[in-house]
Image 1 (cartoon, one colour):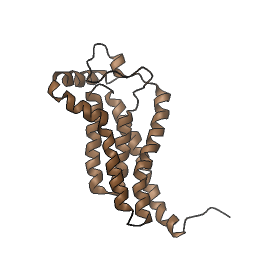
Image 2 (cartoon, rainbow, N blue to C red):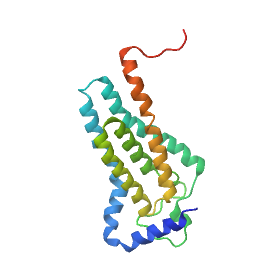
Image 3 (spheres, helix red, strand yellow):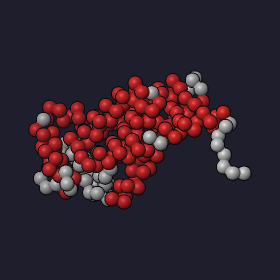
Image 4 (spheres, helix red, strand yellow):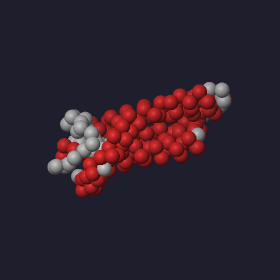
Length: 186
């Protein structure tokens, strides 16, 4: 792959910083679950603020689910073997996934990018924090040796791209809720 050298540089650096290994590995593996309490808080907050706000809040988990569906198709289409199986002599912080668990794009990054961008559309302050979180997650996926940098960049593109569909959802919700939805020819 075109970024195998960068992948090796990052994983070599990670291997040399053993004091940081446990923290980054734990975050990289399980940090994605931190989206759940944020989504629950967002929906709880929106429930008393009207149907449009609730629908907008529900776009966050919907965007994640849709982005994961797109990710699943792309993984099967590209079938890129994980770099820990391809780059010779690399030392990773996590065990290498099976050969049939493809790398492109990064699932974790797809999830957090969809979460962050969808959240940014609904609640800017929370969304900016979520974007910072998503960047850290993406970096961590290369750091632990699970992905090439391009896997993470593709994950950001897929997750963010799907989440941006929320702009269309947000524009249509008030029309649909008011009964003024644009209808086709009768």
